[in-house]
Image (cartoon, rainbow, N blue to C red):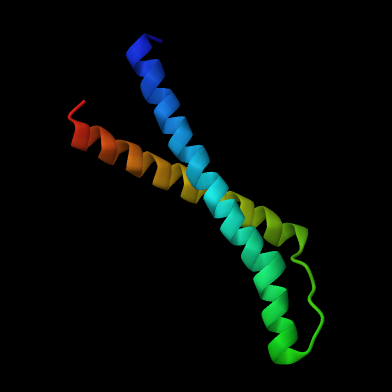
Length: 83
């Protein structure tokens, strides 16, 4: 891999990881903090954590979203910078 392709790969990986971490934070907050609080406030019921199957579905959804959005932003930046 030449130097230019290596830099582009690192930029793409950086964007994918950035979107992955952002999406993980949003989903974790909604599933483990905001969801239980709203369920307790509105229904006065205890919260049951998601099953392992739902956890894996969320994980693959987050992985797909981060790859897709990271790639789209990388392509957009590459297009705008005319590289």
